[in-house]
Image (cartoon, rainbow, N blue to C red; front, side, top):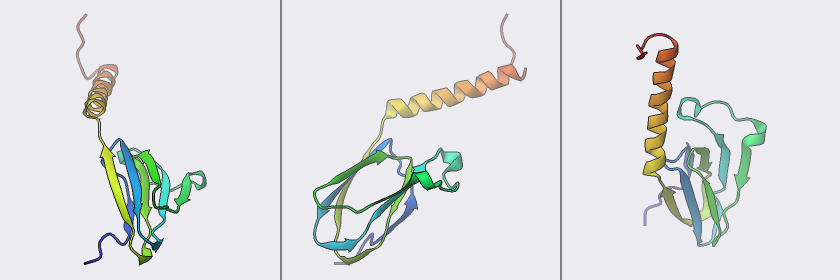
Length: 119
């Protein structure tokens, strides 16, 4: 069987919440690391010391985290690690965010006098 996802680099998920369940097997390495939550615009900014969290996955245990929490998985150094990942998405939340962004842009244009308002 070909090896896949021996390590998973630094990234954010396309989800509001992610559930990562370690299903098992014998393995070494493969620790998860978390480095703080960022918006899209600042996802690659420097990590602050208080944002650093390293976690050793244990078979039968799960990690629940925000999709925007920057994270990755270090290389599995021996054995096989199997995980079940669930990305939980909310279409209502995503539509609300789009609406809020549009509303904020509209308000900014009004304040700058670039948008006519009715009297």
